[in-house]
Image (cartoon, rainbow, N blue to C red; front, top):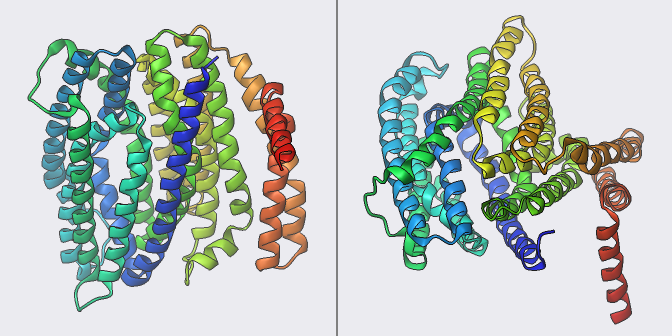
Length: 509
């Protein structure tokens, strides 16, 4: 079993990351509403689809960021400072190269796609070109930032992220204020200001890392023994990450080609809500991930399996207890957030939350497979499933189906990816049992969902929309999920800890 110190560290880091998430969520939801108001639906959609084009070329960074985080944490777990220094410098050298590759691809293929293929109003083309250039620069800074952030996570200093998030939040609020000052093109101003904030935050992280961690003093490193496993890992991860990016951004482009930027705005708002609330489980998993890699590095596979089970259960519960009332009362919640809710935003948001809920199961399994370093079959299986969604979605849209169907296709294939990943983890870690994960995680969580639906659904259909129904639905949902989790999902040991804790508090008072 994982030791008490590690459990306390995970709990502490989770709380710190929750604080960070609450700041990001509050500022993100507020600023996205004001930015939508300042830019208008059309310009907001243009900004998001252009950002999507740039992100398509960042798939190499997505691949390398996973490799960088895994190998830095692995060497830290083995307590090998010399290899840690070599790994950091090698990783940063590679990321600098990737940033340059992204620049070349974006200024050639990407620029051609922007000019000839995207459906954009002619009157906004100049602004779109400027936004595109600053999006490229922001992307390059983000790419070269990865090894520094990975170092902070590896050292489990999540409080640093919380402190910097306060600065980030203040700067983003300043962006919103500046958008309403003076006569200027607000879309262009937003892109420039966002680039400035990205640069400042990157500088803060880099200064911290270079002062606190000796391995973060960069020098050009070309050590084959260090680079070979890192690049092999990245090479296998490349196909999977490219497929994910193609699926996400390809869907954005498909919606643009068939329905124009207004639908892009609706999809972006749905993703904004999902990303805001997804932090509840993502923060917990971020705190768990370094421990999982370190346990594997120390060959404590039994501890690793227990972490997988706990991470799967708790990430799902943290997601479901928040998502469930939001899925039910999505229309009312969006009307509180936005002055004008674009068409399809409600259903896009609901489906995005369901997708993210499935991700609460998928992420711990993916983390465990990455911890082993054996990701060949993960990449091939998951990547292929994600790629298949695009031609299916294209055919459905071509046949005249609504823009809702591609989201449903994504959910179905995401579920298939989860079960394929269970088989792969069972192959990589002999101590991991699919039967155990079904018994301890999938089964209990499935019954929790079934039993939690009737009462909130009854409230929803029997009462008229408004604050009383919203508050009662939220209260009923949270109470029922918490009660069912205690009796169905938690094992005897956890229930005993909870009752002992409550009894000690009551006795104290």
